[in-house]
Amino acid sequence: MKSEATNQRELQVVYQIAQASIHHDNVSALLMSVLDILDEELGLVRAALVLRNPDTDMFEIKASKGLSDQEEKLGRYKLGEGITGTVAETGEAAVIPDISQDPRFLDRTGARADNRLAFVCVPIIHLNRVIGTLSIDRPMADEQELKRNLDLLQMITNILAEAVSRMSEQIKEEQHLIEENLRLQRRLDDNYKPANIIGNCGSMRVIYEQIAQVADSNATVLIRGETGTGKELVAHAIHTCSPRSKSPFVAVNCAALPDSLIESELFGHEKGSFTGAVNQRKGRFELANGGTIFLDEIGDIPTNTQMRLLRVLQERCIERVGGTETIPVDVRVIAATNRDLEQAIQDSKFRDDLFYRLNVFPINMPPLRERRSDIMLLADHFVEKYNKVYNKKIKRISTAAINMMMKYHWPGNVREIENCIERAVITSSDAIIHGYSLPPSLQTSENTNTDIFQSANPSLKDMVANYEREVIIDALKKFRGNASAAARHLNTTQRIINYRIKKLGIAPGNYK
Image (cartoon, rainbow, N blue to C red):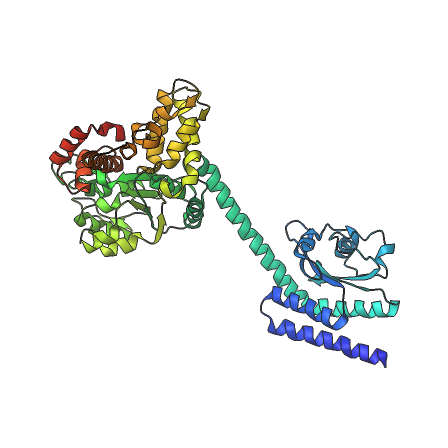
C-alpha cells in the first residue's frame, strides 16, 4: 500500500511539473516553481539547479531551494570537480546515500553543517550535451527509496531539458549584452573620458551612459547646457565611439559666422555665385561626408538658414549657394546650444520643426555648481596638464585655495576652472597653489576680510555699491569680461555699464 501511495505521489509531482512547464513563459519562474513542487511533495532539505556557463564550461547554481543568495554564489563547479562536476562531465547520475562518507563531496556552498544527508544528482541533457544538473539533499533513506528519487528526477529533467536550454541561451545572450556594454564603456573610457571628460558624479555618469547608448546609432543629438560645460567634448566622444570614428569630425561655431556667409560655410558655393566667389568651394557638410558635423551654438543661426538646414536633415542632401545640383550627404548631425530654444520658438526666432528634428536624442550637460564633487577632480587634472605645458612642478593645492574653489559658484563652468588653474600655475612661485594665486573673482569676503556687512556701522551707500559691484562682476563672469554682453544681460546700456565699472574699480579683463 505504501508503494502505491508513493507512486501516486510521484506521478502527482510529474503531472504538476508538466503543467507548470506548459503555463510558464518565464523560464526562471518555471524553475523556481519546479523546486517549490519538489520541496512541498518530497520534503527536501535542499534542491539546486546548476547550469553550464556557455563561454567558460563552468557550472553555476541558477536556482535553488534552501540556500541563501550568498550560498548560491559559492556554488560553482568545473567539469569533473566534486560530485556535481563529475555528473556534468560524465552525463551519468549519482546517488550518495551518506555524503559524510564520500570524499568527493565538496560542500562548496558551506550550507551543510549537518552532513548526515543523502544526495541525488542527475544531468540535464539537451541534444546529447550536458547543459546542467538537478540535485537534491534529503534525509538518509534506504536504497530503494533513493532509487525512486533518482528515477523521479530523471523524468523531471527530461521534461525540463528544453526549457533549461532556453534559459541557458537567455543567459548567454545577457552575458554578451553585458560584455558589449562593458566594451563600449571601456572604449569610451579609454578613448575620451580620462583625457577629455573629467567627472565621476552621478549626473556625469548619466552623460557617459547616454554617450554609450547613442554612439552606435545615426540619431541626431542635441547637447544643451551652459557655456563652458563641455558640450563639444561630448560631441567628440560620441563621434569617437561611433562607427564613423575613422571619418571626419567637422565642428562649426554658428555664432562666429556672419549671417551673409553661414550658408556658404555650411553648404558651399559655386564659382561666381556672389562677389568674391572666385572658385567653387565645398561646404562643411560635404567635408564631413561619411563622418559627423558638430553645429555649435545652433540657436544663433538666422531663420532663413534654418529652413535650408531643416531640408538637409529631412532629405540628407544639399545644394551649394548659387548651384542647382542636389548633392547627397551621409552625415551624422550633432548640435549644441546654451540658449532656451523653447523660448526662442515662442519668440519666432527658431523654427519649431527644426527643433523637433534636432531634438531626437537630447543630452543635458550639468553646470559645475551642480557637480561640486568634481571640482577638485577637475582642478587636479588641470594642474597636471599645465604643469606639463609650463614646465612647472606644482604638487598640491592649499587648503585655503580648496575652500575658495569649493565656495565659488563657477558661472563659467569647466572652462572657467581651467583658466583659473592655468593662471594659478603660472603665478605660483613654489610647489603649492595658494589662495592668493587664484584670480580676484575667487577672493571671497571671508578670505580677504573685506565683507562690508562685517564692519561695525556700514552705510546704505556702501552696501548698495557692494551689491551693485557683485551683480556687475557676476554678469562679466558669465560673458567672459564682455561689457557689452553684460549690459544687454542686465537690461542697461553699454555707456552706463562702462561708467559703473570705472566708478566701482572693476577690471573686466580679470573675468575673461
